[in-house]
Image (cartoon, rainbow, N blue to C red):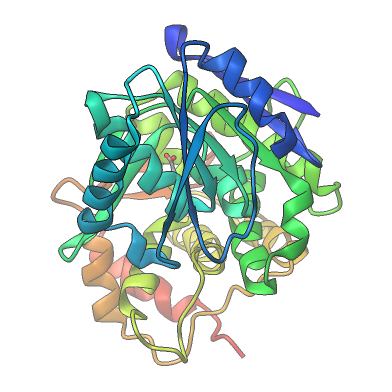
Length: 349
Ligand code: GLY
């Protein structure tokens, strides 16, 4: 097992990465939440992974898919926790991907104004991103993750054995986030960024170490943590504009892959990087076996309006962009450059 510490003073915790990491849960709960007398497990039907908490446990199965991240499901969960007799000294265990860790984490943040929780992350996307760093929340019709809290887990388990059952597009989605870490250019005590030819355990551990370093430096998302949104401005716009459209529907990480190459082209247009650096972005995204073309039929004006509403923006258009000093937050980007760069993109085959 590889252990990646997340240093946050009295809220520090460990991320355990490796095959069979889920079997460490009872020990981790006993170590990280020593006062717990009972546990609740939150999971989804489609996850199908049983865990042993080492405590009397009630399992709550929420609906499959993103629809579980709702205030209605949150209320049902918290009412269930109350009926189960869960106290604020006990523990919530999230077993699943980002939907489950976001929802169960927010339920834990809210229940008794803050109950400990442990994430058992079962998707590549959750292992390298969602399960680490304490962003929790649910969606409302007005926007994704608009209701939530920063609430750090007490421990995170990234079991790479369970990734074997992931559908191919879920793998691809996770690889999009790994490609993001590869292009951020941040080295940690584990070495340089992840590469596509490393074993998956090492990729996950390196991503976790980068995320840990960023979150430790900037838990509440000033400019440093915003770097984790590299490639996400266009990605979120693509996801929002493709909503309900099966033809153009992209998984999150697939959209991030497109967004990374777009961000490189925008940085080149703004004179921040050269052609070779754009090619490097394309090569890295390709090495993770991801496409970087713009889906057919995208409407540039619609994408622009979504990008202008991105949460990084504060009345202007803001991107995370590569440049001479590495990747950084750049504000006040001209709308004309944003639209013109969309025309520089290749179309997806
Ligand atoms: N997923 C980006 C972050 O945790 O800040």
